[in-house]
Length: 614
Image 1 (cartoon, one colour):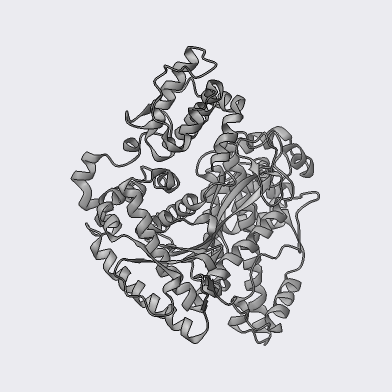
Image 2 (cartoon, helix red, strand yellow; image 1 turned 135 degrees about the vertical axis):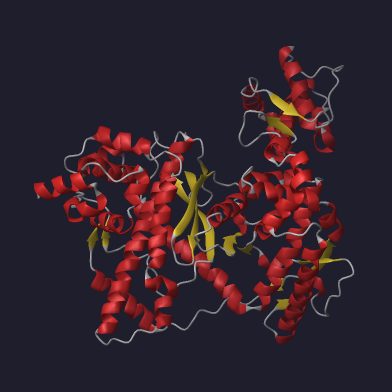
């Protein structure tokens, strides 16, 4: 880390420019916070137009890591190192809430974002009852520790049977999940189903699903008044949700003007419209009988896909795989394949917060099945995230990278079966969970009350908050939950297969998403956050429409074949998904035959006029 700090100190021009851009912002902070004091000192030096660190200047505490660099024999380099130290300390304090900006939505004071201390003292019992959580940690810890004891015993048994190997260094060696028998029937049935479905033009697909669930009504806020209004809406969804721009979409749809498309695109940025449209499509898909073979809707997976973009886009970062600038789209996919939540995110940042936020938003509705399990990869996981998820009422189940190096965290005095001692570590503190329980529950209650998003809460409980009682409680409770999860993951092959299956379905949906959005985000697109949300929501909507249409047609094809006497096992259907897209023509001239669905999609008068024109 020292060479990184030295590199930042050397890159003084960019560091100074970055801090200079913050000059007009009014920061608040705790008087004892080092970053707040460093920022004030740096501003004094800039006011004095100092080019080197004065020898008699009273520097605030910079910590042991930066001390030698700031106190360098060269006072010019010392000033550059102090600027870099200020920048990094300010970033950390903004993330943990010790420094804030009053007008910011994401970086307000911690006390402003959470339930106030007075309200928490008055209504604490009410909030705990709504969460279904005890007043102290013990009623939750006792059964969890019992589960941990049973899980550790199961791991020891698996080690004795040879299904798990622990080497001398404590590295876990777990055999790969065995693939199910490669039965030819599911593959042949899938090919037969899609041959019966046949080819389809994208406009026909959009119209048919709209007629079945009226997502256009959710987007407009009312039934379409005219054919032109409906065409402009479809064009706007295509322009936002694919790599085709407004001008090109207007050229692909006969009789449509580019200006109409641009106006409709801006209307889609209205908060909540795309989310409601997606919910209608997903709910329709869940009512199709064949979807019951894929899951019950109580489990899902979450992951990010990247859209190639220009480096000038505010949310773009270098994609480590493709080595190009890209923007992230984070999606939650049900075990029934539908995308239930989407959100644009910045690449290369922790995804645990948005993973939990998506489930919390989905579960707030009382008229739908609640998600009880979410599978994520390593980027969507942290110890604090596992705690927050559990306290909000669902399990976060990560597929961990470097699984062989993972240890089972156990409390002091825990009896460890012989043979697995090397894979355990006594670094789980029940005392830390008890001490920070009240502060942690205040954060969780604030999420449930809607005062703070789970993504912001996870930032307050992240590594930048080390030393905070709530952070310590979340971290150690997460260690306990992760150990229980790892015991199940190691000892129960079917559970491990289920996690992999959920994540694989999410990856399959990503392939479909890339077929819908084949290019890159245009340089002039996505500059505003509302526009980036519209791109994400429209992309998810188009993907959901394809999934719903395939699901409906698959169900019809299976029913026809069964009526014709063809035997179809339900187990085969569980292994066939609706992500096929080779039969869909996503490009070409888009002709929307609205007259076929006018009575469903248009208001009565407009439907009559459309029928008369035909």
